[in-house]
Length: 333
Ligand code: KG4
Ligand code: ZN
Image (cartoon, rainbow, N blue to C red):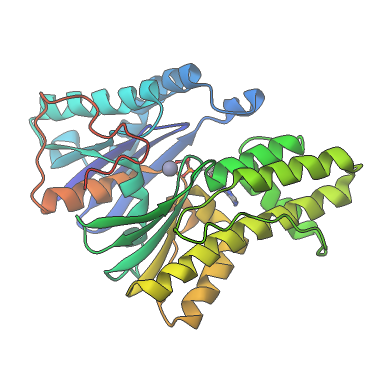
């Protein structure tokens, strides 16, 4: 089966082709121009998706040595995300499915991330704990199989990636801030600065707005030179990693899991990757972290998730409501 996946929920247009269990192509076009504005401008994002989507599909087919008629299933992100951006990929894909008379599966973007570990050679083993950390979401989930996902906790304010982006902005760094903070943190020789993070003892929820405020206060009170910037980045990154790991460990003590999977854009963070691998070692659990290409937004994960739903028997009527997954965490389980 050849599956075409399309992702356009935010500032990446991505087209992928999955053939049986092999990714033949995973093209990602990032809209770098948002940097100028310090964040994603929705209207500009929609226009850029519209311009690039068709050439990307053509290139993905060419790279995979396939024709449109060889595609058996079409999957597209159907939320959550920016409405105008989603609309481009979603309606393009529906139109393609209609014209080719092929099945179409709408995919929840977060579920795409949750199962992105399956794109690796070594795959998560059910039930697994998934830590989803991206620019818009921070979720801890127990994934029993391809259709049973139990939410254990989520952020009550900012998402982890959003906190990275906001702290980067406070330090006058570019967008997206996560990779830049990581680079600065690597330059730090270590520091006594400590940014406390709220621990929500009775739940598996996360909160990152307090740490953001502590960083802001610290910046306001100190003369921030380059060295101090590196130390702030180091201390902030440690604080976020620590809070994430603490909750995963708490869940490991309560729930039986056969593996751990760290996914989403922030899963690209080296410090977080190392710490979750250490935790996996301590608990003797297989720990799956997708390679960088599959951490950020990509269509390979959308194709995989769509295919798994199709194989579970899910079908979609092209005449039904346009966006099935617009809720912030969008689960329909
Ligand atoms: O999953 P993603 O590409 O898009 C969303 O669905 O949100 O995640 C983007 C987020 C941004 O907030 C970005 O700053 C963060 O992932 N990010 C990182 C790193 N690379 C990307 N955060 C920390 N360290 C990184 N290396
Ligand atoms: Zn994402």
